[in-house]
Length: 215
Image (cartoon, rainbow, N blue to C red; front, side):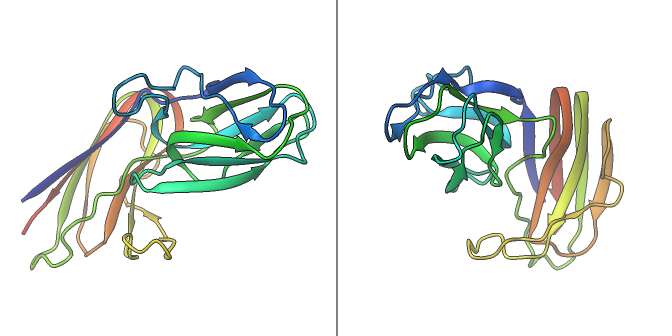
């Protein structure tokens, strides 16, 4: 019997949670000084989000000639990096999901202030992946999702190789645990390589996925 738990809580929807408004003169790193930046021993100076989220870079001027390199870790704690072209008096978004942001490098001078935050309402928030035992003789997984607060949650599953960084897994929603707004239970009766929790709309509270595998 295998019990694994994933919890998403204290999620960030803050325009400057990672970097408070600042102007960069010349190429260099932005200062991580928002409320999400940790002061604990292990993550000191790192922006820690409540789950893997889209990062947004808001430009007060025309930063379309500036490339922002965002480096951190994804939902499975693997180091990732993404180059984002700055916006013109607008917001630029990463396509990758960051659970932590370790640094943001600007390729040149910004046209006025930039601030960096995270999105929790307009885009998805991901938990780390649970990898069941696919060699179990009688494969079956029981699941429960415990929700407190206001949010929309789905449990997703994949049969792709989640350990191969060259593979982009295709995720599908789990029947009965898709788009739920209150606590619920469900199951998976066939082998899958990964299970994760996804939030598509968030106002407050936390969501916890409990997974129990037979065999």
